[in-house]
Image (cartoon, rainbow, N blue to C red):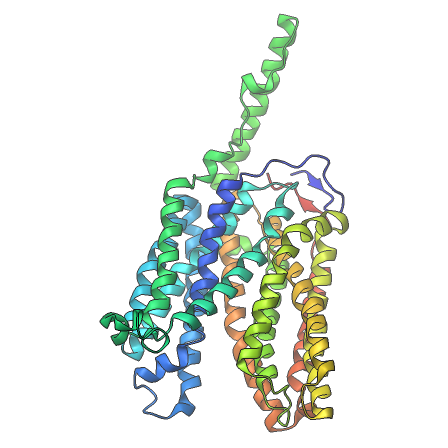
Length: 484
């Protein structure tokens, strides 16, 4: 494969198959929608099953199991989906995701027992495990001239889903109380107060499935790997030139067929993926996922903890407004800025800067807590620093996600192993997302209860993990392979 320098801007960018990319992004949107819609109402939903026996102190434990079941199931199935897509094609495997999610989400909303919540939440995660296939399709729709533009949009899709999911869950849960004169009169919604937000997310999944069923094409049909004689042979003035050109093209086609045959016969086994070119990018991506999921949990936890206990003393309403405003304001950044930054400075440099932003993020949570504790409340200075925190950590941090996937694709040992590589990455990343929140909340409680490092040990630990992630960035290649 030829290589190119990612730090130099390509003189001519290949045209993007915009419709195909848009359809794939719609399917990717189902992951954050399904994952986050339950957050506003999961505690009362768990209590309604009777599993806690009326003891609300146990609610968090049981709710945490449900929240992690989604990502655990996704983790255990994602490689299987990737390998299946290598064998049966990307399109049929990808279509199963939103269709299965549609059914599982409806059943989750209709559940009345705790074990049913676990079962259907796990099924949601299992069908969402084919999200890695969507990234494989994006990789096969791109080349070295436009891959930065495509994958820089991935943080935006997640951001949109994180805004929409909790909003749907918070507004539409328990319609008997929220809309007593309209939706509250429907007996189904009175008997199942948390069904409506699940039904809306399920409806989105069904619509995305139908759009993909009609408009999504199999990727191999979009990008033929061999050239044809009529498209390659230029106009020649002599028969001798024509014969020479024909021999050259036939020889080239023969070589391409041999390469394709060898590539197709390469088994996409786990052993094949255990090479530095695959492991370092996946380690980088997984650590980014660990840091991001932990930071995402620590923001509301730190903000809503009382000042006396080492937090900022803000209300959940304040936190919701802050997260919504940031999410909406952050959407233009990956569209207009990240691709240009990657082309200008190179993918590895942008990844390194994005990872460094977590130092700012965890450090700012520490600093804001100290500042609020010094004055006894979240004063004007705290409020003034919060936007700066989100700008330098959350917004800049999105660059790490945008570039991490590029290096994973670049490290795939062959095209036939691309699905398995993405599946391996998605499994590792999902496991990191499962561990991160549990680790963060446990360290937070441990730090406060035992006054470790002044009550701020949790931030110190994650800053140390950030340094490890920065080290993995330095092991990434400076140049990317031609992805065609």
